[in-house]
Image 1: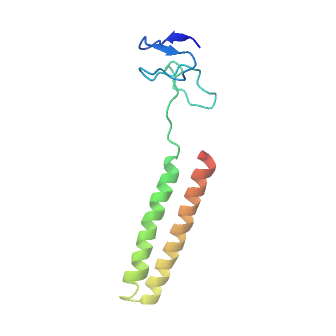
Image 2: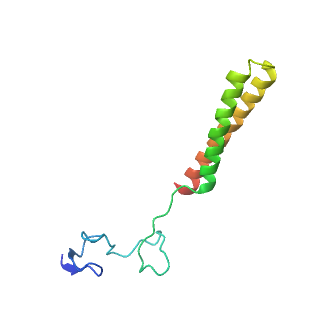
Image 3: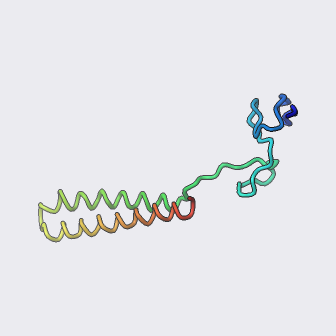
Length: 111
């Protein structure tokens, strides 16, 4: 193993090191599967693992679950218990299915 000079900070680093210990610059070529920003000297870019559409589905499912819970257990006994309770249970069921869909979609597309 030989020592090489980091192109960014000039510190002596082992040629077997994946990054510079001084500045953190990647010294080895980025794997073919990593995302590289244009004009960034082949530095790997950090990407978000879960897309916004799946996060939006999860947020909608949590909101629907809370709304369905309130309808089923709090408002259901006030006016017309059968209609509010039934509607609350339907909202809870749809929210649960939406959350399962969002979690499976995020897992399937992002591992």
